[in-house]
Image (cartoon, rainbow, N blue to C red; front, side, top):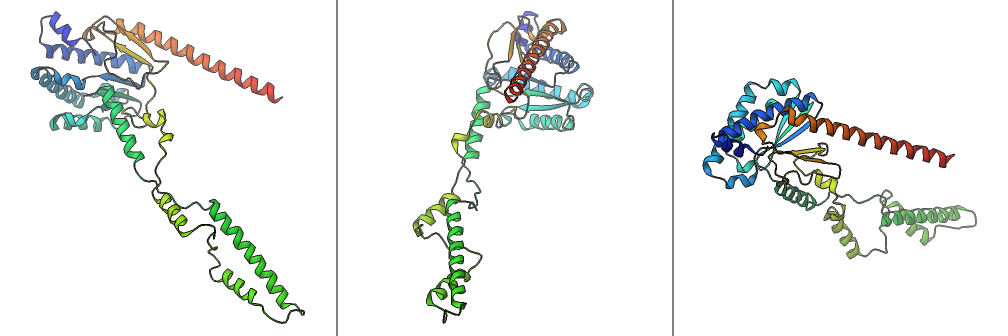
Length: 323
């Protein structure tokens, strides 16, 4: 949502009024999106860098956010009509408590909606999101695993085999001692049978493991940590603000500026369609948005058709090979 200040300056109105008109443009765009079947819309409402602006403008933006959230609470018909849940992504601790209260009420009011999502990035930067995700991942991977001794470890298998061998040997000795040719019970039988019947449910420990080795093994089990090599992009995805949401398909920036400005850098991928428009955000209406949306839908349909063809070709190739 870029160009509110320039729009206000070019039209001779207060900067805060330009931001207010930008909110009205957002309401128009949201209705078009949800009518068109778009399930997740994310708007860049306030950058962390914006705190560097004048106190007058920052305070005005915060007051406007409170006012617009209050409007949503009183007139949430658009969100309810399309089943939209509000989520606020960003550094909550940078906001004042009264504004946080309004945000939490808006989130709670729409929490039962499950058909679509409106992400409001406020206050947000992508670098901060990525840094937060990495910190969260490091915290998770710094917690010891609750590891139990493996019942099928190599040492345990050795103990079971050795115990069975001793049991078989003891049985044979008893059979020989009971035969007519055997006059009594040997010392070997006594020692063997006592060793196997003293704790029948607990096989003897592997004699090849020293006490030190067993202690080291137990400590390793108690102090096991997740393997850092198992950290993948999917693991980091699960720690992003957008965890569990679909990938970013279409990114639009208005005002003629052709850069991402630290927005959704992690979520952009090889198939993300990025569109830069010259109109300012308060001027962004159906006539600017509809051509972009139609082109994106056409492109998405072609991509899905190509994927279907590839899957079909792969399936036919597999059937030919198997036959």
